[in-house]
Length: 524
Picture 1 (cartoon, rainbow, N blue to C red):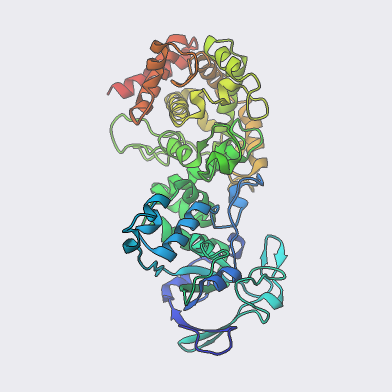
Picture 2 (cartoon, rainbow, N blue to C red):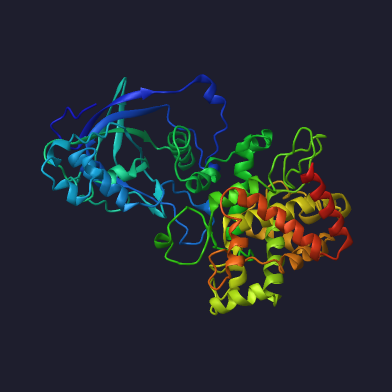
C-alpha cells in the first residue's frame, strides 16, 4: 500500500476485488453515464500535497444556467472555511482547531494540542486515455497508468510529475469523488515530516457511478446538505427502476427534483433561476434576492402534488401521486406535462398579483420600487412577500393541488393526456427538464378547460395579504397576524387561511364546490 519503489512516480497499491456474479445482470448504459465499471479498485497512500496536485475537482454550479440534469459534475462548491478548519485540525488536532485566537494564547492551551489524523480514505477516480472533462481530452503526458498483477497494482504517475507544484498540460489525471475539502486543506500547505492520506481509487469509473458512490457514502450514513443530495438524483436515475417502484419515496423525491429542475430551468417559469438549487449562501450566489432552497421546494411538492394517496380515509393525496386507494392512476401525465402544469399555475398567480392593486401589493412595491429579478413585481418575488418563503410556497401549492384534486373529474383533467399533446412515438421519452416538451404542453394546457379554474384561484389568491411579519411599516396587530406562519405550525395555518380566503372571495361555482369539498376533507 505504501510506496515501496525508489522511483517517486511509482506507487504500489493493493487491488481490491468487489464484484458479484449477479451484478452482471445490471443494465449498464453509456448513454446514461453508467458504463460497466471495473471489477476492482485500489488502496494506497500518497503524500497529501502530491494527491492535491494530481487531483482536479469539477464542481457543480448554477452560474452557467444549464439544467442540473445536464451537469455531469459531482462535487459541491468548495467551502474555504471548512478546508481551513481541517488544516488547523491536521496541525493541532481537536479541540485546538475550534479554539479562538485568544484562547490559544492562554497558558494552558498547548496541553490541548493533539495529533490531527485523517484516517478516512479519499475516494478518487483515475482518468483513462482519451477521457474528456469539460470539453478537453487528457493528454498522454498527464495520464496516471495502472498495471494490475494478481493482488497488487502498480500506478505510474505522469513522467513530469514534480510534486505539490505540478500542473497538468491538459486535464488533471485524478478526480475527487469524495473528500475534496480534506484535499483543499493542503493547498499551499505541506506539513513537516510525513503526512500521507489513504486513498481508494477507481479506474475509469463513469460519472453517474461516481455520483452513486458519493450518494452512498454521504447520504446513507450521515446528514449533508439535502439540496446537494437532491441535485445528484438525475445522475442516479434509472428510468425503468423508477417506474417499477412508483410508490417508494425515492421515486417521489426524484420526481419532485425533476419538477423543481423544470421550474428553475424553463425560461417561461415564474421561478426561472429563482430557486437556490445547491443550498448556497447569498454570498456564494452573489445576490440579495430571496430564494427558497431546492430542498424546501422538494419537501413542498412531496407534501402537495406528489403526496401519496392513503390506503383508506379521507386525506387528499397529490395530483401527480402514484395511485389512489382504489388503485386507479390519478392522472396519466408524463413529467413534462406535470412540469408545465406547475409553471402555468405559477404564471397565472404571478400575472394576477402583477395586475392587482391590493393595498398589500402596493405597499411592497413602494418598499422595493425597482424590484428584483429583471424588474419583477416585488409583491411576487420581493424580500417581503411570503411567496419567496418556504411557508408561502408550500401553502400556495397545497391549496392548488387540493382544489384540482377535488375538481379533477369535473375539470376532465384525464382528458389532457400525453397522446393528445405529443406524438405517440415521443410520449414516453420526454423529461421534465426538456424545454421543448414543456413548451408544447404549456400551449396545449392553455386551451384546456382547467384554465378558467386556475385563473379564478389565482385572482382570489392575489387579494390575500402575502406580506411577511418582518415587512417594514406593519402595525403591531398586522405583524402578529403574519407571525403565525413562522415555525412548523405555520404550514397548516397558511393552508387554513388560504382556503378561508378563497371561500370568502371566489365567485366561480365550480371552484366554490371544490373548496367546500377540500374543507370537508380536512374537517374529518
